[in-house]
Image (cartoon, rainbow, N blue to C red; front, side):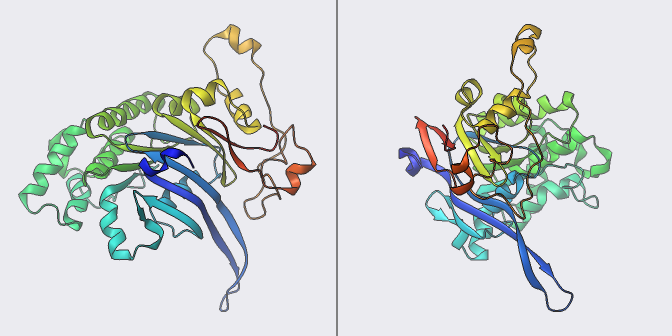
Amino acid sequence: MTEASNHALLRVVELVKHFPITRGIIFQKQVGAVHAVDGVSFEIKKGETLGLVGESGCGKSTTGRTILQLYKPTSGKVYYGEVDLTTLPSEEMRRMRRKMQMIFQDPYASLNPRMTVGEIIGEPLIVHNLAKGSEVQDRVGRLLELVGLNPAYVNRYPHEFSGGQRQRIGVARALALQPELIICDEPISALDVSIQAQVVNLLEDLQDQFGLTYLFIAHDLSMVRHISDRVGVMYLGKIVELASRNDIYANPLHPYTKALLSAVPVADPLIEEKRERIILQGDVPSPVNPPSGCHFRTRCPLAVELCAQKDPEWREITPSHWVACHLV
C-alpha cells in the first residue's frame, strides 16, 4: 500500500470473508452469502495502534477474527512480517498464535465460568509448553499484578469479579504468551463509562512497557481518537477511509466519515450549536445483497450515476490519507 509496507508488522491485502447461506435439511445447497468482509487492505507498523471504526454489523470483528485465522478467509492475504498466515498448516499456525492474541468484546462470555482465574491465565502457558508446575502460578501472579489485580485472586471464579476486573483478566490472558500483536475487539463496549478509561489507560501503559502493536476495534470515536495513531473507517465490509488520527478528525474526506464524525458530541456548547449535523437517510443495506458499485451510495447525499456502476478505487489523496470515493 505504501513505501513503508516492507516495515509493517501486519499487512492485510484484499481480505474477503463471505459466510455461506444454505437451504435444505439433508442435501444442503448454498443459496447466497453474507458479505461480511469485502476486500479490506491495510497495514500496521510495529508499536503502532490502528483504530478500526464503523457502525455495528459492518464487519470490524469479522476482520479481526479472520486476520487471526479464527475464520478462514474466502480470499485475500494476511502477512505477519513476511509469513502469509492464510497458507500456513494448522500446526504452524498454532505456533504463530504465540505472537498474536485477542482481547474479546464481552468479558462475561469470553471467560470460562468453570475455570479459576489462575487456570484461565495459565492455560496458554501450558498449551504452548512455556511453563510447568509452580512456574505457571508464579507467572500468573505476575500477570495479575501487571493488569492491576491482586495475585491472591488466582483461585476465584469469573462470576466473583466486576466487568472491568473480568476484562483485566482477559488482558492478562492475552499477555501470557508475550505477543507482539494484540487485536482488541471492542474491549470496552460492554463496560461502564467510568471503567472504560481505566482499561484504555492500562492498554496504553502495557504498549509502552512491552512495545505492543494493537488493532483496536471500536465504535466509540472519541476513545479511538485517544488511543489510535491511525484510524480506518469501515462501512458494509469495506474500509472507506484511512488516515492519521489528527488528519481524519480534522479533515475527513469520505461522506460517510463526515456523517460519522458529525454525530460525536462536542463539549463546547458554542461550537456544538454552529456545527453541521449530517443525518443519513435510510438504513444500512443487507450484507447478503450489497449495492452495486459503491456500497455507501444508497445513503450518500452526493451520489451520482458513476457510484452505482463502478466500485471506487482505493486512492492516496494526500500522503498517508487513503479514500475510496469517486467524488473526492
